[in-house]
Length: 194
Image (cartoon, rainbow, N blue to C red; front, side):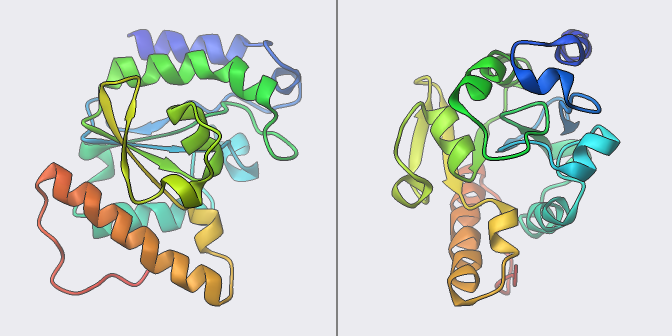
């Protein structure tokens, strides 16, 4: 019930300039009692149009990653973003600060066992740090002293061509295997090609 109210509050939100420029606020998709909460940066064009996070190409890759972990989106996973409105550029600190109360409440309400921060913006916001994704990925950190957080690369970064991104795909899978280990999930028999 409170999550539905939170969605209505996000739709009415005008805490920053993004509230008047969006099609709709984008709150979440997935289970309301998840093992894992995946948190990205902000809605993309498709997300803004459809009202759900990670529905474009990056979302398709995220869904593949979730399935490769042996998790079911409707049962084990909650997906959201730091920002609830689509920005035209990299999120500004004031925009992140305006949206963080929504994310804090989402974390409290769905109470995931583990949080996975996808990319720089999510990792910095959740961990309240200036450390980049390269500095924090692959290491367990704590959200507000209570929730385990694993940071890894954002799926949109993993979709880019080139050797650097191919290496990042392998590294992201290693990060997700740490999450699987923490949750007591069996490792797939063969490595997954993200």
